[in-house]
Length: 454
Ligand SMILES: *Cc1c(COP(=O)(O)O)cnc(C)c1O
Image (tube, rainbow, N blue to C red; front, side, top):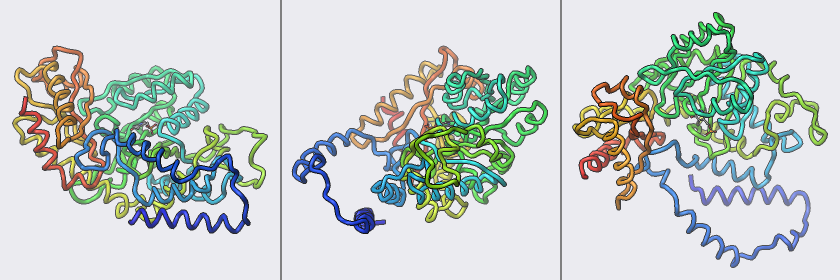
């Protein structure tokens, strides 16, 4: 896609549409001439250089990459109108696009019925799921694994409900025996399961945990903010195929959150929450004196906690889904490449003398650390931090990230490493760009070199 061409087309199209409403004079108070703008723009672009090359395969750090050009064009085109998806009065076209895009997400997870909407982030999407959970089980708390995103503990605090962190097993998945112990107390009304932890991409055993719902009368919410689109690889042929059971089980859960701004090729500002039972919409009821005058049809603001939201986000997602739909043959191919890259790198690390795999990747996130002598947590921590810093400072840089692994988690995986500290930073690479597949040998060589040179 030629971005220059399509951004020009975006401007032409919106101007043409604007022209159908008749001429008017822009107010002089808003006037900026091109020379003045050019000078400020130069300063602005210089400042933007203080950044990391998220687009480049040498960037193998955090969950960051630029959006797909289709999403950029969709976002910018709609933004020139600037619809607000709070209400149909804020722009019917993008409200319809939001409903269609959300329906595709619900379908991807296998929901027969649904009520959902986009949000500004996974944080808000999870907040809404926990808010509904609290309304349905007042006075009861929320259980989530110690590897769940920190947002759950924080949002329990915001909602005034008790959070119950449950230990994880040696692969970073929620420990179901420990969960059941907590459920036996009767204090918990909702269990949060994570389909792809933010740290290492571990997938909780959703299919097994479902049996606990009936036994203890709890709701099950799935936080698939990061991993949700990996459901497209469930049961797939080839090395990238994932065990189908946990992903298929999402269809039976009560709610799910997925972030199109992580693995859905979107710019930031695009999360989603989907409930299986449309009746939960009643908890959002409110009576706005300002909005909802053009139609009695459902306005998205009537089923969301946020008020103003960018219609442009819905537009970008809708346009992207027309081209790269959330199907195995669409977006699934993008995720498959990153997953194969992670598996390939894990094999290279397994065969390496200088690096050790922390655990086998379940999705596209690789955790590893320098093999140090003597093997202590303190030495692992120092070596990981040094490789991270040296990689970024190198004239031909490579960008990684670190993850703090606590002492018990480390011991469960690597009992040979002496636990002389509370934990250690390990290296972590999120291979969320499909280009990583072609680059992983080179990345591995670079990280090995960085580890050797001290
Ligand atoms: C990223 C993430 C979140 C938070 O979502 P934001 O979009 O960053 O607000 C919550 N849970 C999981 C599992 C995540 O990966």
